[in-house]
Length: 562
Image: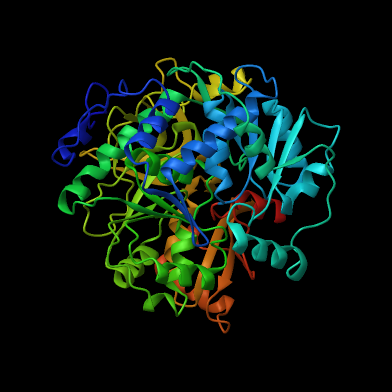
């Protein structure tokens, strides 16, 4: 039997030169201490760009302090939960940092939530304050009296960007009619909250590594959404881990100020850490993209910013850009690292991306419960690898069998993670926490993967997405990657459906790139590429596939549909 990873860390010998085995978070007592250090060091730099409006570190310092002061006027208890229901607008980082400075816990909330989903999250978290975009205020209005929210701040897409913002808001409200009527008695505008805070004297708040920073709700793809409790030390650790991982790329090309493209939503853990938090730590600029689903508009923005160095994204976003005719004209000469996460990066997508941009997609892996980064390819790879790289510093990965024992290297099992970035547990759910944490501190991810002899980890699929056909395990990721090689396929998703003969069978949902594509062509291709039991028994053509807030295809919704 090949050796396991216990008492052995094969990945360490493949760390790039200069990357430490362990990280140290003692430099900052809390995230707030880190922010304030950056505010002092980078005061005159631009922290954010949004619709042509720049927000400097000094302005972010002042305005987030004013927002913290406003929250302190509300008489909240220590650790009060503040729900932020905003897309990528300047108000997001101001409110987020302000809430942390006030000693509150940030509850990141998806603006696209239905009333049912929003009610669950607000009540589960016990949030008492809500900051919401006016476009979604009617959703909260329908819940009045059903939550513990006592204070509401309503803002708009254009509120914080001056005269241009007034034009933006007029178009959004009266031309595109994207703001349903709403009425929330006693609410404040974002500007009013900042003004109220500017009249107050800040109260000193003591925070430490064990203070709760975020309740980061899981996507709910496998049941009711749960709040992962992320402490200040969890995020601080992940920032140090990401900083160490970026170092080899930066040593090859020294850059005075990093520029991040923030197309993923800041309320999602991927962008929260990889864009907002890393940008603050490094003194970088984040270019905020409020609506990356507008691919044509997104490409125009890319063309305006050739200075972009770091581009985090998901497979579906890269795929949509790859297939838009205008993207081939965009030049990104300064692109240093393209980071792929949130879902599996498919080989055809990665290869086309590198052909068009000249840079490989550096695929990584993490979860809300791990702040999020646990594994990632090195930032100096030359091409797509097909795996998720190595555990980052101070992180251990084990691959576990169903009985909790560790499997041999090269064998599939459940990925389990131990490190300082792993959550403290699920909010008010000790039983759920106990089910995912081993007695020696490993978090069981629910993902099936394997580790090779050199410590490189490969994702196979979600444990709950696995299809069992006549006793054979079939993984949707494998099928989807193969079938997207067929030129007429834009996107696809595979699920298991009941079958009286084999237990389960594969049902395939396909979005066409070529409108003439037929079921027979797909079946013929699958016959060439896949063994018999892996081939789809049912094929359904759709105009689009259901996706999460970051663009991950939601197989659960397809199963419900089936």
